Image 1 (tube, rainbow, N blue to C red):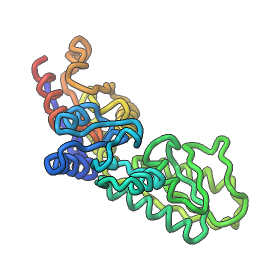
Image 2 (cartoon, rainbow, N blue to C red; image 1 turned 135 degrees about the vertical axis):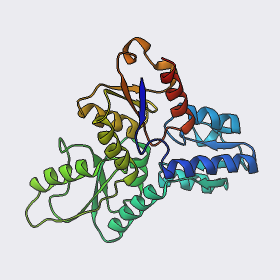
Image 3 (cartoon, rainbow, N blue to C red; image 1 turned 90 degrees about the vertical axis):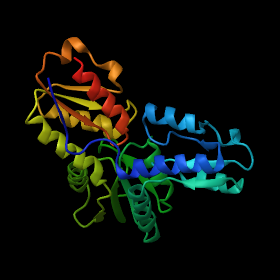
Image 4 (cartoon, rainbow, N blue to C red; image 1 turned 180 degrees about the vertical axis):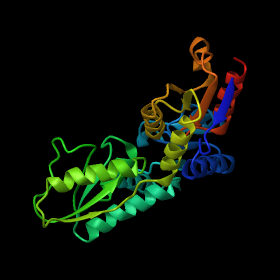
Length: 279
């Protein structure tokens, strides 16, 4: 069996930056608290717990004087205000790409634009974006039931893990429902990191019999990557770890492509490849 890796796979710069910040902070301060997963990958979170990072579900469960870390996805302004009000030590591991999207939303509000966010309204990143929209905002992944102002100035941004093509398709649907003279500004806040993995996966698919995508089940970018691989027409299998490899199925393919989401650590990818080579 031949194992061929995608030219781009695994940790993106933002995730690598966030994990390194948390590891450094744990060495400096000891215990670090966080209200959300730093990244959506159980293996990363398990290792961070070993380093002293504790995940809690409420700000009230964090002791006075403790250190709190924001995740790579950012955080709503109300949560940041609550942390500051308690004078807790704050470590901001927000991905720079997410921080730029937050800035775009804030600038829209400052100029009086109502912001439409193309993304999952329940996702932490989108909730953080919504909190920066003092002039009003709404988040949605389709036009169905979308309530937007019929008049006024509008701005469209995207959850950073969305594909640029998906944003443009949404923008076309949006324009079709707006009056011709509507002042709509489209701001592409999509991250190039997932796109690079999508392109690499499509290229990989042309040279293999099947593809394995390694990622966390809660990772939006990993699930999107799996969808891209399935669209190639080649069999695509989603795994969180080497333990999930189905020998009887995978062993039937001669050339296996290997890719991974932007929140998947190198050591998990390596373990999957090693297990495949043992088949």
